Image (cartoon, rainbow, N blue to C red; front, side):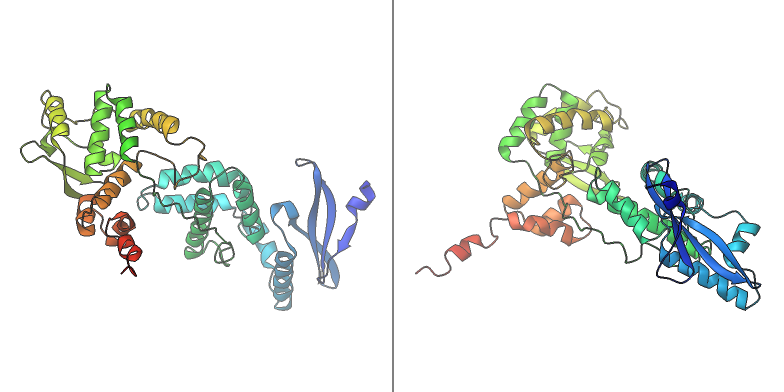
Length: 372
């Protein structure tokens, strides 16, 4: 393709809308730049709208051209020209900063959201005009990210973009429809963790850590109380009631406290471990990352062989210890409401997933349904 052909203005099916084929030097590929033509004061005028690679499409050009023609008929200055003359064009990064500022004290994981934005979104659409970003651009970003990110992560990124546009609309920084809305299809992934350790696997895990007192204590507490990692790490000496074989547990997710219990084996271990502690000192004296790193090596070596790193449903992680506790309670025939209480679930629906493991699941009834 020669330079003359590349620079020729080519009409589209829409009146007054053209494009030129150009070389995108950065991507080393052919790109298109869109141009609109309108008549003002009996003179034809041309205005460059933007490149295809920037997300500009014919419908957007048509919208801009119609705006200009309407304003000319009413004797007003075209809005696109007015924006250019009177103020700096608002880019997506501008409204993202507004969103982060607005939510810094409202959203618990705002730092994590900002980090995701800066790593995965900012370089892609951060410098684009908020009116240029359309469904096609979002879908392209979505498809690019799917190449190396888990689907749930990609869905979270799309959700961030939608939330940023919503705050811009509410503050009248953007007058238009949210490009996310219902136009972006998100794949629903069944990634609820169902994996639990069998008795044999529990023995493998305990044998691997039996000489590491802090880790052995952590795992035993997790297996006997079902407490989350953050809950276990916050247990202090005063929370442990040796006489009643119980532990006062703090659920940081629900901001509540509840009671957990332990057997005599763990009781002996705890007596030995807390005898040298002050009442406010923590039972587990290692940080979250130390525990996670050590246990992950064991999980990967014995339980996660051949599993994809994004297989949330089947991979063993530290949270699997919580599911193991509830699963074995169900297998032993523990009433579902008792499991709910021991897990400190706010909603019984969260506990019902373990009901299928109960011995009274109905299997025996079905097998003998028509027997004489």
